[in-house]
Image (cartoon, rainbow, N blue to C red; front, top):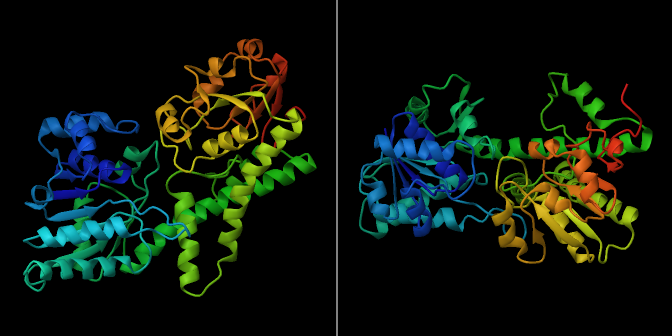
Length: 442
């Protein structure tokens, strides 16, 4: 099929590249000329495992190309996927100005029938609004909306940064929102190679399902973090508790790792947006409000523990392992690690950090307020304390003896429990995890 992707961020680029790998003819459009230039050279502007190889493969086969010209992108398109960002406004609602402008420009350019597919996460009712905008733009340039038919479809994405390619190629479900079943059926032909549940629903249901999924997973994270605090107070171990309840198929084991809270470009944005959606409907979403509060408080607790242990942080040297919001990505948007670094810096700490992929992204946000190391041991050298803030597997392989030798102090504050079972005490280090029992395991 002939596919056009509007927007080459995480969702757009992964969607376009993976559809091209399935044999579709894909054109990816973006207004960012520098980004498109890099992509034409086969360079992906962010880190995502496996993506760059697929970009080069798609271009070599002639199934994938990139452009900054919308008319070029739409020329042969049957399906146009909207993958434009919907960042949060100051009050937490979704900013739809970018996707609305993208749709307006499509309407001003379009000269044939298309299926307009929304991948972007948007509030309930947005797809109907976008369809109206297309019609208005067509009329603006003298084209009859009754003659150029635009079929609106909602196709929420469920991609996890760090495993996005695998998530696309091995989906656990595919949702399509539509007004007419025939439109959804045509889109599902594109997904025929995937053996997974394929659910057709109303446009509004598909829009709400995406927000609901992210909010529910965020709730699991906040819930286990609250249980972790109880565990610390009572002598239980949160890892044992999480394993026990995760074996219940009604609960499941995923998103039950205690830590410093969720971050990234989706969970914080989408939980706040859903709270605003509920408010706009005249509802007070008490549970979601608590989820957001708990997540913020988790960072407070972590910094407070460092302060209580080290005392006044002015002049204290603190090593940081991890800046990205999670492992296998260079994304630092809404990263708990970045937030904690900023708080420690505000209290006078001297910070040196290392992240396998997120250094450049972090530098854009933190500038020269901290120092950047070339490896984990360099970040810990001379430190009064070490903070582990992202769950990179690399950190588990660092030699404990050498770590203790290079540090000035002995305290290791692990916000992800990455090093929990490595017996840091045997190296003379004092280990502080989240929700862990101080006694030796059974």
